[in-house]
Image 1 (tube, rainbow, N blue to C red):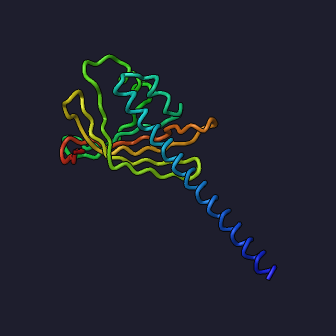
Image 2 (image 1 turned 30 degrees about the horizontal axis):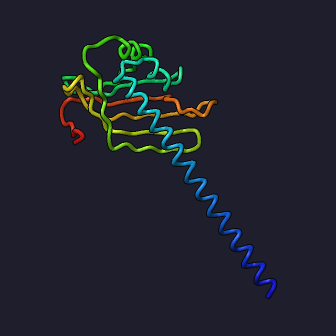
Image 3 (image 1 turned 120 degrees about the horizontal axis):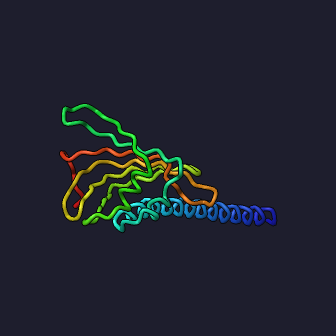
Length: 164
């Protein structure tokens, strides 16, 4: 009788321990997902605010940036960009707000690596400019902050399915 009672107590304690571990792991995953999402949101907030310092803060120094598009003649092109050029464009005064709206965002995380895939539509003021997909890869730095290390986007003006 005493042995059964001890086994019952041990099983109960084990179940509590497993539940706590699962709950803690779920919190860690959701906290990381939120942190990655906040990094991407900070980028687009900085663009709208014409704040190149805010935008700069989400990128690693060695970030690689690419744009994939078709030329007017239908040729597939891949153009590499530079962070400094992007920051200069963001920080230069422009009369209308640059607004990149995103949706259908998928975030995947494994350890200190994250990947974000999202549809977007880019507007200059109220006027639609182009659409496509943004694909980000992020790394968690030594201060536990998520930083963008790779960014590639597609760009087109036709066949855009805009967010409603």
